[in-house]
Image (cartoon, rainbow, N blue to C red):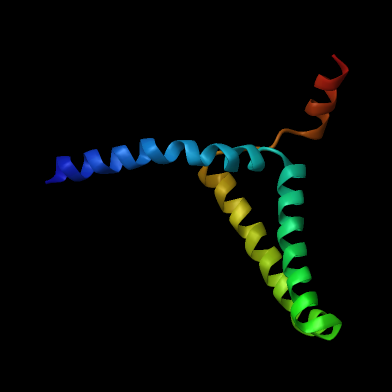
Length: 99
């Protein structure tokens, strides 16, 4: 039974690997990560603006947006550590652009 479960786990790992490609692409760049997080928090703000108006946005939306941003920031850090993704230094990136 252990070999069957190990085989199933291996197959699921192999089938799920292509799903991580866009996530890894987004996590490899600070700008892409920041833009994605801004889009999600912006969507929350737009939702509160349309459903509750300006008052709802200013009272409930700010707290919810902060929680969403904090959760995304923690998730990005955890995923970068889990997927072993390190951001390059700005000095290294600038040096490559000159060549």
